[in-house]
Image (tube, rainbow, N blue to C red; front, side):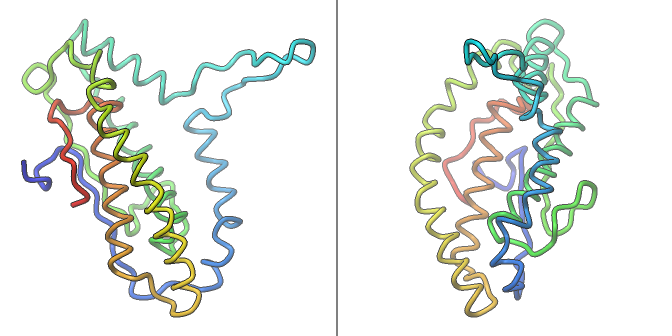
Length: 211
């Protein structure tokens, strides 16, 4: 399968130079926008700790989990994927990817809630009756297990690449292109797995590829 034809695509513009000061303080600068994203995505979903028992109470798992479950049920019983659900998922993932790109030093542009900036993410809207098997969403999360294993193993060298890139930017103002391509490829791989197993926009099995 040609990866360029996969229904989930991601490209990030390579920056010729990066700001050394904002790179040094990146983990601090990202806190406000990360907090905002967490609220939208549902990380802060009203959960609280019972002071007497210490047990976590309340909380629903957030809007991401809710949309996943609702989409599974809609595909299974109605063979529909409401367009506004898809559009929300698309924009939320674009925002999340801009945030990730900023945290991974792939861009100096502070994550926008609206503009694409240097991050170009596309998902193809599925024709459910033509493109999706109505029962497959029940097992996609399990079928994607080999990808989870590979992505977990790759996370260690990717983190190492980001650390090396951090030092490189501080000393040279540039993100080494080879490391940039690795980190972008890892992010792209994550997107394709999410499109298959979580967003449920395709039945095409994700390729094992960074490209």
